[in-house]
Length: 405
Image 1 (cartoon, helix red, strand yellow):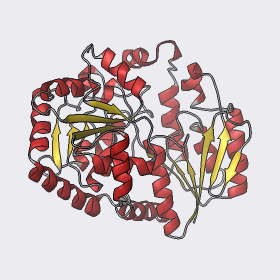
Image 2 (cartoon, one colour; image 1 turned 45 degrees about the horizontal axis):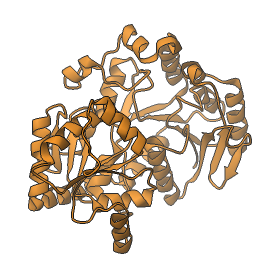
Image 3 (spheres, rainbow, N blue to C red; image 1 turned 180 degrees about the vertical axis):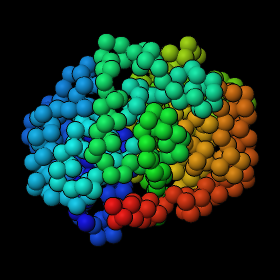
Image 4 (spheres, rainbow, N blue to C red; image 1 turned 180 degrees about the horizontal axis):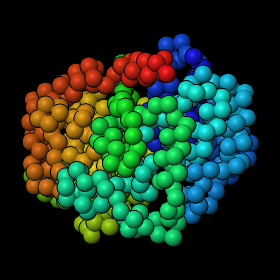
């Protein structure tokens, strides 16, 4: 099959998941091209290399909720690429920023086999779903009122956006995939129907790290002789930075060698510290790495003792959980979103409400003190990833979906 994959850009978890899946398709003998975008400031030209086409797309951020629906220039470029590639299958991922949902209509002109994988809530929400009622209901109340949308967007609000997205999905897509049951329940509640759940996978065989390179990584960030908690991904309050700071203050005196390894930008982290109201100096127990490439992220997981995902939003299916378990690390994860679908409470780690900072601190302390339990949970996580979340299983499931179309 000739598979054309659409995704807004090449950064972030959805892009990484899409690229990993593409590699799986190629291993099965399929021809895969990824269509993405870059900013015009980088280059005004269409950039092409083997298996990748990047379109120059820029616009005013205030127009985002209008641009995501339709852009004549973007649709024209996509149409020309469709004519050139002539795909049998079009598999879309994120479209809500640059490639636009009109890409689905254009795709239907060339093949009826158009599919989309939804990785997040932006097909029905203007912002991450972290309303008070969502959190207070332990993630059960996913409803959003007009006022919720208005609070998320202010003057950039587009009242027709969600209606037109639903219409584009209904008219142009043969199959809609959600990456977790938690996301599917939210999509159902917002009238996006006919969803199939396919969890993201991970290449469990691609986990080997040279010990010398791991040691170099530890030296670079002064990680030797420390108890390391890894916190990765997008750094923001809805990812649980507030509770995490509270927990650090609770455990730092009882575990003086504890260190939080933040695989992200130092400035963003300091903004979260300030927003949480802390004036305390965390420099001795927090290390920010800045951006890390995929190989460096593997070193970070190997260096860590525990990985935590304390999100306070509908975090649909954090890839961090799979990366941690593949690296044989226990996970302390959130009850919100798709984490309970990958992390088994008291088996591969602990699943809890991050706002219960006493319980959060207790579980972190337990795993940092009890190396035997941490190792047992880490090994259980590795087995779970191999059995339930392998890349090969994900690829087979998607190919079955495509072939039945």
